[in-house]
Image (cartoon, rainbow, N blue to C red; front, side):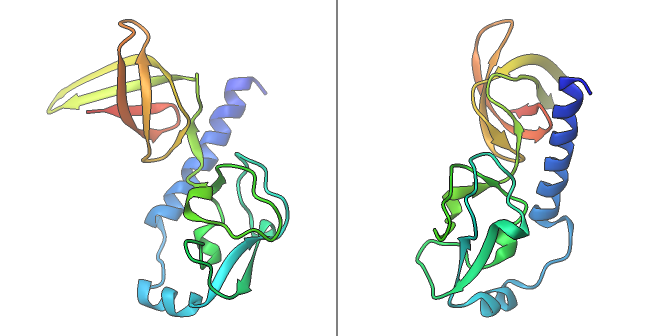
Length: 159
C-alpha cells in the first residue's frame, strides 16, 4: 500500500467517525442523555497516546462528577486524543476532538466558492484539524496565509 493510499484510507475512516459523531445517526434527546449521565465522569481506562482514536476499551465511567469533564462515553468514543491521557485521569473537552483530516505540513486543496464561481488552489496546512475545525493554510503560489474550515480529507474551504 502506498503512503497516500494509507493516509486517504485513514482520512475516510476519520471522516465517517466525525459524520457519525456530529449527527449523522439518531441520538437520544439531550435531556435524556443528561439524566442518564448525571454524576458520572469519563476517565481513561489505560494510557491513551496523543493523536490516537479513542475506543470503548480506552475509557470507563466512574461515579462522581468532575467539573469540566466528559460525562458520557459517547462523547469520547470515536474522538481523537489531543494529547497523552494517563489511566484514571478524567477526559475533558479540550483533551479530545474530531479525528484529524488535515495534518500539519500536508498539501491540501483550498476551495473558495462564491455563487457559481469556484476557485481551487494548492496550499500547505500550517496546523492539524478535524472536520469542521479551522486551520491556517499557506497558498503555495502566492505564499499568502488564509484560514478556512476542513471540509474533507485534505480539503479546506476558504471564505
